[in-house]
Each structure stands twice: as structure tokens, then as C-alpha cells.
Length: 117
Image (cartoon, rainbow, N blue to C red; front, side):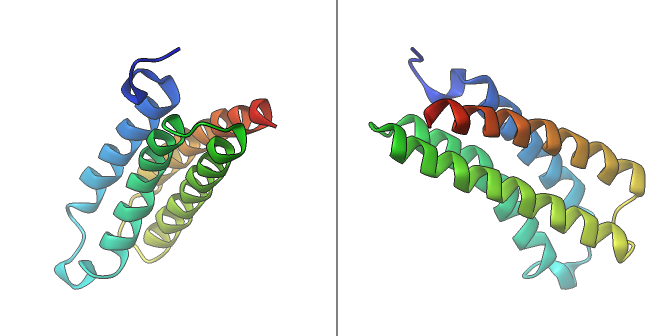
């Protein structure tokens, strides 16, 4: 049993990825502050936020629901990365690397969801 959600490896990975996404978006144009920048940062930070919320839930069903939301936010983040690359804001190598990391994270989250079923 964990004393804190910060000890959970999938949370640690999600937290690190959210920070990577934040750093990637620092160079986006100011015109994107209330659009892509905000959307991708919120999606990326939603993953560890929902994992942490799942850790505080009592029932398997509640825990699973928050992991499902976290997984969805991971897919949303990937979408924003693909979009940002497509319009020339991000470099392909950067997005490919982050998308792979999110694929790995989504796989780990999916395993947790299956274990709660």
C-alpha cells in the first residue's frame, strides 16, 4: 500500500510527461495562449491529477473511473501533439518521442484499469 499517490510509478511517469509537455509549449506563440497552449497543458496535467484522485477513492469502480479519465486525457494530449506538429509548431522527433512515452503510459494505465475490473 502506498502512503501517497506520489509513490505510484504511473503517477510519477504522468507527472514527468506533463512537465515535458509544459516545457515544449513554452515556445508556442502568444496567440496560442488561450488555445493550443492551454488545451495541451490542461490535458497533460489532467493525467497525473486523475491518477492522484483515483488513489484517494475507496471503491474499485471509483478508482477505475478516474483511471479511465486519465487514459482519455493521455489520448487527448497525443492529439494535441499531432496537431501542433501538423501546423508546424512542434518538431517531429519531439512529438514522436512524447507520443511513444504517452503510448507506454496509456498501456500502464490500461493495465491498472483491467486489474480493477
